[in-house]
Length: 199
Figure 1 (cartoon, rainbow, N blue to C red):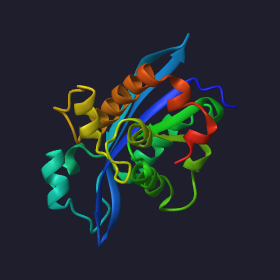
Figure 2 (cartoon, one colour):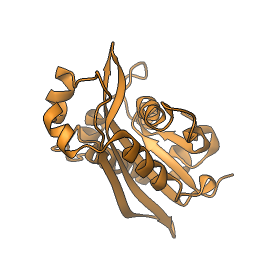
Figure 3 (cartoon, one colour):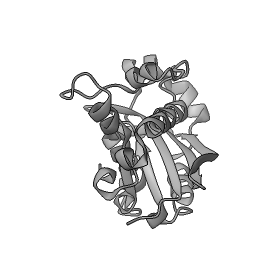
Figure 4 (cartoon, helix red, strand yellow):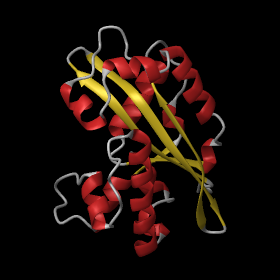
């Protein structure tokens, strides 16, 4: 069994259209587990310029407040962003780290697109992954047949959502919801056991 020491809460904001899929923001919030406590030790956040031919769709602009001109100014070139994300992730021992998201299949896909769209460079499947949404759905959702939103889980636990749809803020909210579930349910029901880690 893994001895987990590092939790990486992840969220991405991305474009998804007929012309392609691309992440334009990636945010991680990092926690260490020490003496049974979760200690926030840092975060990692960057914006990425869009690939040629891609534009932010209306929905992406609406929910994030971002537009192409701003993204071009604050976003990193693709190669720079790829290098920074890989440099961040390689700091964490695989056997001691879990990447956690809210329904993170899309986030996982976006990481893979950024890191490996120009050739296989970094296998993100080497990390253990945890879906916090599945835990909420199993123990708290009224209906088990749909995927509850992060916003609905935040409302349930009285977590502030005023900065929703910023990747770093959403990663932080995911962590707050997860830790509230752990407090109520205990770690064994929520995470850090192999059968719940897979996404």
